[in-house]
Amino acid sequence: MALNVKLEAFEGPLDLLLHLIEKNQINIYDIPISELTDQYLSYLEGLEKLDINLASEFLLMAATLLSIKSRMLLPPMKSGDVQMEISAVTDVEDPRNELVDRLMEYKKYKDIAMILKEKEESESRIFKRKPEDLSFLWEDDFALSKITFDDLISTFSRIIRNQKVAENLNPRTILKEPLPLKIKIKQVYSIISSRKKVSFRELFRRNASRLELIVTFLAVLELIKLNKIKAYQNEVFGEITVVLKEEA
Amino acid sequence: MDRERAMGILEGILFAAGDPVAVEDLVKALEVPKEEVVRLINDMKQEYNSKKRGILISEVGEKVRLTTKPDIYPYIETIFKPRVKSQLSRAALETLAIIMFKQPITKTEIEAIRGVNVEKTLNSLLEKNLICEMGRLEAPGRPILYGTTQFCLEYFGLNSIEELAKLD
Amino acid sequence: MDRERAMGILEGILFAAGDPVAVEDLVKALEVPKEEVVRLINDMKQEYNSKKRGILISEVGEKVRLTTKPDIYPYIETIFKPRVKSQLSRAALETLAIIMFKQPITKTEIEAIRGVNVEKTLNSLLEKNLICEMGRLEAPGRPILYGTTQFCLEYFGLNSIEELAKLD
Picture 1 (cartoon, one colour):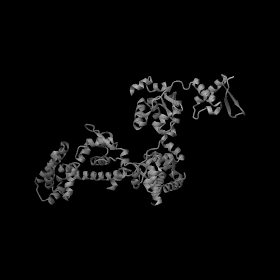
Picture 2 (spheres, one colour):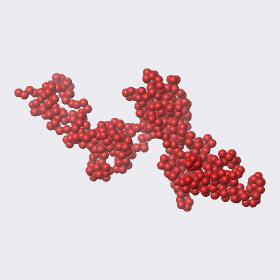
Picture 3 (spheres, rainbow over the protein chains, first blue to last red):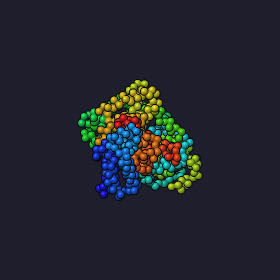
Picture 4 (cartoon, helix red, strand yellow):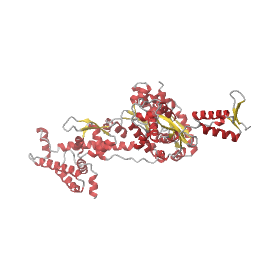
């Protein structure tokens, strides 16, 4: 189990090879291929317990290493130094070259990945700001043209997901008529009859809608017409007072 | 703590927060008395007064926040406005979507959902004949109830509100 | 335009935007040449260096942004709950590094360099919007070509990919 964890720490066969090279302080341009292959294979023995996909990649590398090793054993068999000279002069490729190139290239990106990790780390320590809601700047300025019903559905579901408040709307009674005049007349009359004398202004609720203002005004007119109340004004633009007309 | 450093920390906190931050929280973060935090904020106000600054610090209740100076908005508009010109603004789209699926609904309820004042948006939707008043709620203040117009339903390919219910 | 006023406007715009803003957009808003905007930003960097300031200005992928200074982090953490930071795996980072420098690149080419299958890693990077498809290679099988996104630069706070090569 401990071995498994250790092997999973490697991102792939190249990563494992780089680790072995580093651990054994091997000169990457002159890899003792049989030594490295032996070490690599001994690691592979522990791989059998790992998932097959990963293992196959490691096995492919094992095959590559063995192939390089066998090619190096083929004549002309000279000392390492001479071998290098020959390959330089006669253009005979060192069988290890391709592997070295791959290792170097992989190492380059592995190093960049480390820098990216640091960048990610430092980026997580700074805070950005949520964009300000600037829609008020152009609120009046829109056209229907590009909106579809799907836009509405997705917008709505996004809002509802973000806001549970919407689910807490209370059940309520809805009036069909905006504000029946009959009801308003009763309201106004009951206010005036209980207080006998009311200023006209007081009959209007604060924040009343325009429609409500009109209906209230109509109610007052209606009550005057019905001879139930009397309205008077002491000066032009002065306060209008409404009084209950005592039943004769 | 060094006063200049404390101002820097306050600025950083308020910037990251976005929303207003309670003075109590600032006291907790800086570990200085409340009076000192208030003094620091007043000093920062002076700093932000400079022409070099495009943001300002303000208090809402017992909370503090950073906002853009109002005179910057025309410049912001030149950058961001054209993007939404030919389509419903986000505010209008969200408000319309809420009314469409929650109708009949009052202004207060819409505001509770969107978290912003929707007065202007509602007027604009009324003008475009996308929504209409559908009566009043029997509740204190008798608030107006809004719903979508037939025109709006048809525009989005629906025959009636009942069809919406089926989609739920 | 007055330089101090211009700095104020830049600060206001960047503050309101939240997301990084393209230099071109800033040029459009200020109506001054690009070189002047760049100079202004550099001057602002100096200003933000002050201890009094908790935010800084930086460039990511040809865009400019405001963020908090890293040393304010502990104070912000005391007020706000620490964010759950999901960090990218080593496999993801290595794959991204390759795509950054070799884009546009196919899956097979990435696998040749890394020596392992990158199918899952690519999908997860696509999901995170760190990479995107950039068309297809005119070759048998017409394999998909991958490249990094603008968001990828922003994610790592990089101005350009070349910046990484210099760090080498």
